[in-house]
Length: 410
Image (cartoon, rainbow, N blue to C red; front, side, top):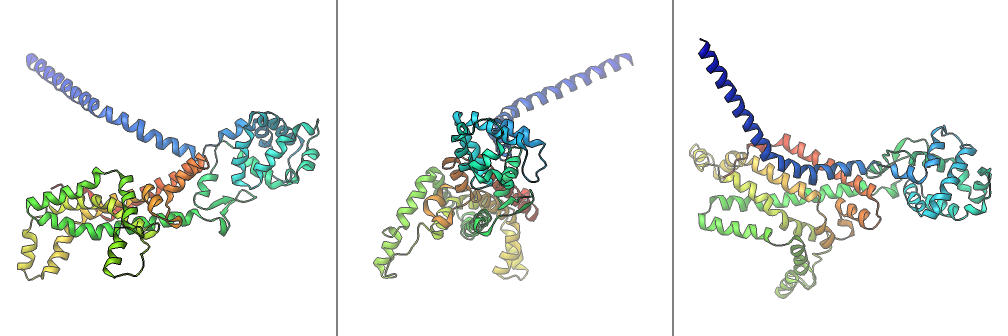
């Protein structure tokens, strides 16, 4: 019995060591991939999320003002200490050329702050010594407006929701309540609606074109199927920018399409096919069509043909057998294709920017605008957060409506 116990313990130790080695091997195989995803995916997204609410740079430019306004109740005008603090900060920030950045940041919340800070910074030497309250108000009446001090107090917090709110056409009022922006300033909600509408339209077009194509590929001979697959994959072998520019040449007034229609006498003048919504639909559908066809084909290739034959043998018409038997079995492919096309369309930038007009630009265009033109990383990050939330929301909706996990590869 003692020898048997020793043998059992030895076998148990060997099994435990073998399991430990397998775990180490699994971690070593997955580790590099997790590290790459952490560095190039999760960390950038985390930085974007943080940048959309980060406001710490304001306290670096106006540190004394931030300290003085902590104890201000927000009613009326602050005391002399707050005016003395803002003068002390402007005397340092204006020569260092950091006051302009703070002015642009506060001007985003209250128009007029940029000119107020720069004008006051230029005339600091003329103020002399304290008291500063009456001197600043005499210099510019805005210093006697409680609304500007409310904005400054709100703008000197380390964390702010200003940009996230503005990304959905909301703002703070004079009492720090969240309200809608004036109608003439409400632009981002319409941009979000436009982005969803264009993405949904392109997804529907890809489904209408891709479903018959995938069905034809799945039911054709091997030689025809391979030829169609090569033609489909040619899209991936060409640069997105080149493909988009090619559509401009094809769809312009003197392009291939209009020239052909004019030569046949079908039209008397060129059709507006580019730099508008039509061009966006055509170019984006062409680019994203493979992402619809490939999931559909992978599902259709795994559906046995005898299901439809059995339905027809039981009295179903060809149309009824197709829509009641065949089509439901392709739902995982439809869901996967629609999800891939729709999510990619949400973040499209190059194609709408080149072939679309001013009213056809999507959220990604304005992200690039705030980064390249306005150098407003906080607003760009906020729009990126909105786009991320939209993508995640639609993914959850699609995941619940269609069981994508049932898709089988052919």
